[in-house]
Image 1 (tube, rainbow, N blue to C red):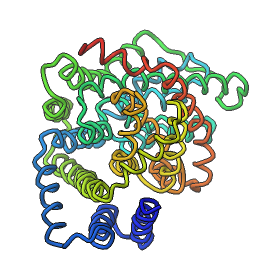
Image 2 (tube, rainbow, N blue to C red):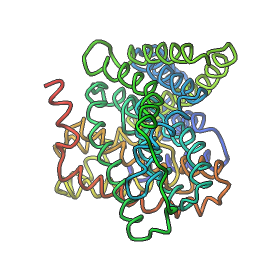
Image 3 (cartoon, rainbow, N blue to C red):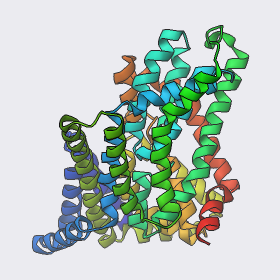
Length: 436
């Protein structure tokens, strides 16, 4: 009962600060400080010593340097014509599949996710191009927005994923293995989305405009040329990681250099571009890293309060089978997804959920992929679904409309989680093949 009251008081602190509109990272720091001071009885000098140690450790973390590098690379792609080339390059290849150009949302997000690492960036970049083009050509608006909301979340799962880097740092797992583990599940989710679009287009042909553009062999060659910059960037970044040439942090720096070279070769590199991409990366990186550091402080605080250990012992005493624990954790994460963003969900919940998962026999690499999938769902659930906000701004539609459009793809994510639970090899085969 003491643990329950302590956890309730901590949650009350957090809801109070978030409800007042305080920034997330400040809320986390205040909750950690208040919990240690009022609930643990720790003096302020000791609290300051703990906080300064955490800030120093994370601020000097080499693994953490991958986050601003991958964000900067995504900013360069976002502000050049690589994203526009992506739509042009995919169009000829999907024009003969049921659903036709609607698949550019799924395939475009899948490819862009492989060099972005950010869900909002993937959704915004692909969405700004495809929503306008698909709307002008007469494609169903709801299916277009829904597929964008779902596929945009693949930026969290398909490597390089910023959320996976955060999980790897906090769980002390190999980021390279996590990246490899996210590839096949990401392709599986992408395949589920495309299959759904094909089925909907077959059942209701009115969702897709009639007629098909005639394509020549030269059109397909031009399409391959348009896809070449992104393909080169993907090969450099992911190839350097999986071959062992570079660590994820080093590969992020290599990716930035490659993106700058591509911008130079395509005659788009200017001082203004560099300044804008650096400022964009600085703002986003500061937000992510601030949340990560203060959430680590809060995790330490709730550790001092023995909340994770007591909760873990309480759930363990229920003697739930592994699948029962997975159901409980899934409901827990779905609840968090209504109120928190992905990074906050990972860093705040991991001290509780990871020990439970390990105790139940789940592989920590597999659990990382499962957790990212649950975080993906948070991107498309109101009221704090970031992808919904992005698409609302792009389309001008009400948030309720966008949320309803995304609902089928939310259900498909649940199907993906179920498949991952039944067939864990979907996540574990590739990292075991590459790294033993």
